[in-house]
Amino acid sequence: MITSIAIALFASFVVARFNGGVGKLPVMGYDTYNAFGSDYNGSLALEQIAAMKSLGLIDLGYNTFILDDFQYEVNRSATGELLGNKAKFPEGIVEWTKKAKSYGVTISPYSSNGLKTCGGYPGGYGHELQDLETWRSWGWSYMVKYDNCNFPSDNITQQNEYGRYERMEVAIDQLAAKYNEPPFIYSLCQWGWENPQNWAPRIAQAWRIDNDIKPYWNSIATVLKQASESYLATGFYQHGDMDMLEVGNNGQGTPVGDLTYDEQKTHFTAWAFLKSHLLIGTDLRNAANQTIEILTNKEIIAINQDLNEGQAIAPFRTDVYYQADDASYTFQNPPGYWAGNSTQGPIFMIINTADTTQTLGFNLTENWAVRAGRQYKVRDLWLHQNIGTAVRTWNVTLPSHGVAALLLTDDGPEPANETPPYSFLHQCRNLNTSILLKELPTSTSVRV
Ligand SMILES: *[C@@H]1O[C@H](CO)[C@@H](O)[C@H](O)[C@H]1NC(C)=O
Ligand SMILES: *[C@@H]1O[C@H](CO)[C@@H](O)[C@H](O)[C@H]1NC(C)=O
Ligand SMILES: *[C@@H]1O[C@H](CO)[C@@H](O)[C@H](O)[C@H]1NC(C)=O
Ligand SMILES: *[C@@H]1O[C@H](CO)[C@@H](O)[C@H](O)[C@H]1NC(C)=O
Ligand SMILES: *[C@@H]1O[C@H](CO)[C@@H](O)[C@H](O)[C@H]1NC(C)=O
Ligand SMILES: *[C@@H]1O[C@H](CO)[C@@H](O)[C@H](O)[C@H]1NC(C)=O
Ligand SMILES: *[C@@H]1O[C@H](CO)[C@@H](O)[C@H](O)[C@H]1NC(C)=O
Ligand SMILES: *[C@@H]1O[C@H](CO)[C@@H](O)[C@H](O)[C@H]1NC(C)=O
Image (cartoon, rainbow, N blue to C red; front, side, top):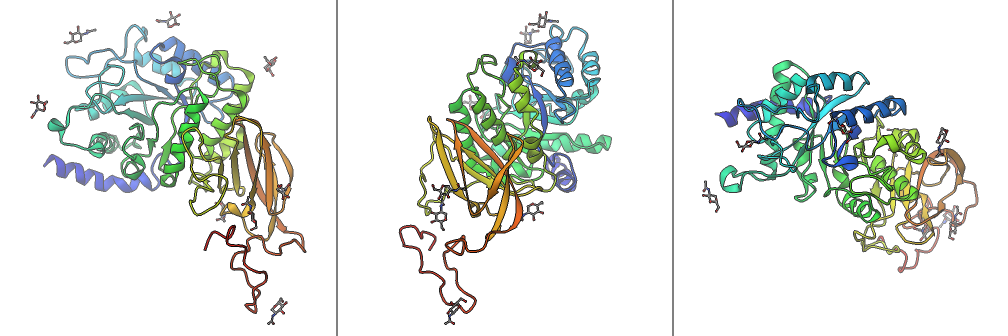
């Protein structure tokens, strides 16, 4: 009986969720976890929100503020409600929320699908709709980040990962129907352990692809490797969440990070171009100018928030048939060549994953959105300037762990008399069907 009601609700709302519903684009905002872990309270959170306002971040679109774990009272009320933590929010959670929202952010909740959150606070299991009602009554909205800790054992629930997470989806739809309001965006956090890209898009607008990020290069590299295996599930209303940003966490953050300026630019570019949420995770009171420069790069943000192109960039040269420099990527050595499309034109993200400076070259036609036989103006989205015209190839020289973020715009047919005459030779023929050139030698002609 209950199941059939749930299924009926699911069926009637699934269209609204994915077609014209919420969560078309990745979410931009702030989450307390990477900056502070468990060590934060309402006044510290308000200082971050005030800094977001004064630095222009809210106006740029960072307008969702997530209070991560460690923010409720340890016990629910006698009637099962979540309670705002009195020590951390002495003015009361509703009053605090009013102050926070006056800056122009939504306040969005964190919880977990279990009996307790990962930090030991009350979890949502068995209280899904009740907790949504509570958050709504506090003035919270927009998105739920939903973790994966402390779930009752299988012999009690007899649910798989999908079932664990479907419960909150059903409740979100029930709440939306009850109040005739848009549903909360559902951003589930299963850490990528059970290939969530295969099932999460059916019930959520976003799913975490990885374990908790850390503010070190080896963590960034690991997430890139994981993204290279799951990027294909992304699109409008379905985002692979690569976890909150560590931009700014050099000498600060929880734990204290050591990301260089180049590594932070690479991190931000990758998260933006792979259509991950962009959730700031650094103490903005101490933000370096370079941190703000990175977080406010409008040309990079425009790719993340592109209304016409929802799919993440894709790695190229990961094909085992391609005899490129590396077909055996690892967590320490993730793919460095990525490409995709945008409203303004084809984009490339080239990362130097090595520990020394390198020159990395590629053929334009390695990006599917590039047309062969045409030349392209190249814009560097970190230098904010056009850096030349590309005919067939482009090379970038990058410091260790550095990035090139390039936007190409069509600049007409390529010059006459290029040799060889076709940019992509394999199987090319004259119109009279004679072979223009001999086939490439088999050692390089690998796409047979
Ligand atoms: C919040 O935390 C800050 C910094 O740790 C501290 O100075 C302040 O007293 C705390 N405020 C409350 C209300 O606990
Ligand atoms: C929470 O509830 C448990 C079990 O009822 C109780 O032992 C504990 O003292 C309570 N903790 C607080 C902080 O009220
Ligand atoms: C589930 O398994 C635990 C551990 O083996 C056992 O103690 C418990 O009785 C089982 N519960 C049910 C409902 O079978
Ligand atoms: C940061 O930028 C501001 C405003 O442009 C400038 O006044 C300040 O000197 C800069 N600080 C550093 C450490 O470069
Ligand atoms: C790239 O995206 C733009 C914007 O949606 C679109 O107009 C263009 O046709 C796309 N390019 C290709 C090759 O599909
Ligand atoms: C670029 O294309 C040429 C001609 O097809 C090919 O020989 C070369 O290997 C390609 N270079 C790269 C970096 O893929
Ligand atoms: C890139 O490097 C390759 C190999 O050195 C070279 O053939 C090509 O002309 C270069 N392309 C550009 C645009 O500099
Ligand atoms: C086919 O066309 C090419 C290019 O126009 C020309 O060089 C060649 O002689 C033609 N072959 C035949 C058999 O007509």
